[in-house]
Amino acid sequence: MLRAANRLLPFQARFPVARHLPSLWLSEVHPPRMGVGKSRSVNFPIIDGQENKFPKHTHGTKEKEESVIVKEICSVDEMNEGEMREFEVENHKLLLIKSSGEFSAIGHLCTHSGAPLVKGVLSNGRVRCSRHGACFNIKTGDIEEYPCLDALQCFPVEVQNGNVIISASVQALEENRRIKTMVTPSPTNKTVILLIGGGPASLVCAETLRQEFYTGRIIIATKEQHLPYDRTKLSKKLEIDIERILLRKSEFYSTHGIEVLTNKEAISVNASKRRVAFKDGTTQQYDYLLIATGCIPRKLSCAGADLENVFCLYTPEDAHKIHELSNEKDVVIVGSSFIGMEITWYLINKAKSVSVVGTSKVPFQEVLGRDVGTAIMKKFEAENVKFYMESKVTELRGQNGSLEEVVLENGMVLPADTCVVGIGVVPATDFLNKSGIKTDSNGAVIVNKNMQTSNPRVFAAGDITSFPLPLKNNENVTVRHWQVAHSQGHVAALNMLKKKAAFNSVPYFWSIISENSIRYAGHGVGYEDVIIHGNMDEMRFVAFYIKEDTVIAVCSLNYDPVVSQVAEVLASGKTISKEEASSEDMPWIKKI
Image (spheres, rainbow, N blue to C red):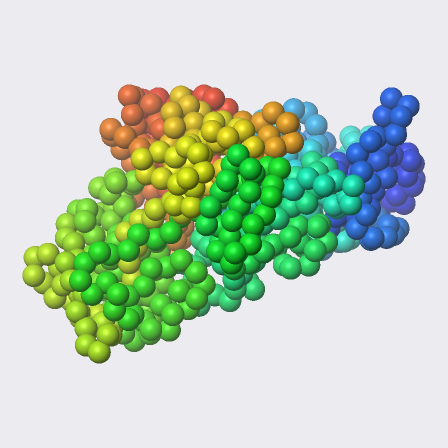
């Protein structure tokens, strides 16, 4: 419990040496002293008697003195080893952690979705969010696993006379998060790094380059009309405004010298000449290239597929049209996996009727298994969704170019004012056909553990990659997860700068298919058995996917933080046996 007699102490009295510490150290390790909520101008420390040769930051922001609160918040004995606890300082919360006998304090909310980290998993000097798997270093607040863009604030901690004392600026407490320090371009650096694609892989790559002191030109070229945005939210809330899902505002790019070219579609790559050609007739030379063009929706090939009101969800404009044309209408969803089912859930209380057509026996069967799929299907049926499983669409019928009916292979005819197709995607890599960059039979770009393609100056990241996954003994796989794209963009940037880095993430994703999100970690392709704990009828369960008597993946609904716990075990290189997964006591948790 919080001690009743918390004391506010003058900062200089408690930390007399802090004013003389290098400002870079302060910004990265103890940001509250500087109130870091955005990139700041800093002076680099003197190392071994000589000035650090990295370029200085020139954002033009002025350092200013901030009032710093110093507060005794608990005694050393009030917290157990391995415990995380939220404390309030000046009506703002922070997260205090006791690990390996030491105390540290960081922002209390995950910077990805705002989830309370106190409900997460503490392991190996980091805390993993229970919702979507993002990880933060407990000493610095830095990102150690995605998906997220911002690090956490961290706060100096001192133990004196058996009491834990925190110092923090009000601004840092209010912001919770911080953008890591970045450099800006230098006119003397003539190199160019071109990033094709406007998703998280390109953005994280660009940010990592600036964080790692790259001062050359960075160009993000996207065929879309928008700045990079969170595409995963489109299927969850169709009417969402683009401004609410932008990953960064326009000011961010100008501040950090990152050029974003919209409506800029690449049509070819000349790898030998290091040049990319665009649809608008322009070309761009590069020193290093990242290909992160993502995938495009697979379309129906049957008669009537070109009728009006037949949609694939790809852009915010698609989402808005589906929302507009589904209100109080008969809607048919073709496809019973994640995109289709998320849209179905969204439309339940908006459309007149929603029908789902799928080729498997139950939704999600290939990924989540029959039992989980059956439970989810029952949940949707209780909301009056009609399922037509083990079936295919053979024709779309309409009049005057507008859809009216969907015809199934068994002859059944479904009334349809609107049809949404979610039957998978294909890599947007056709423009690489004559580039010499190797792709697999599915069109995915083949990369090594460093995200490097067959051409040493070309890297790839995100949904289009075929990459070695350590979790699968470095077997090449394609994993189309939001978190994986972030991580691969980060790895690609480091290797462009000759900083050795390899992809070593545990894939993690989530999907809204009821009032809560289903969570999934691992790589379950080829699972042989499924072990389920919980109550499927109550939609509270955890499912372990087993291959060769070992857990290869896990999913849960209303069972947090089990998926993040499993992810931490797998990330440490340890395994969970089928026997351990079968036990209600979950003995494998001791491996965290």
